[in-house]
Image (tube, rainbow, N blue to C red; front, side):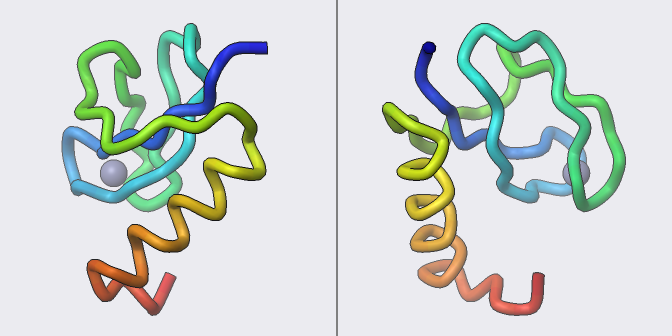
Length: 67
Ligand SMILES: [Zn+2]
């Protein structure tokens, strides 16, 4: 399995997970289909678990506590 990426939605700026090699991913916040290759990659992790922990850390740092 490849890496799990944390990407930023090109429309709303929301952060979510995508598998490396995946082409598109639907943003869970605004519903936009995001092109994974074009989206800004905030971070990457070896496992999906690690990625979700990382995502939670980034969100709490940014103050996204209501999601
Ligand atoms: Zn979005």
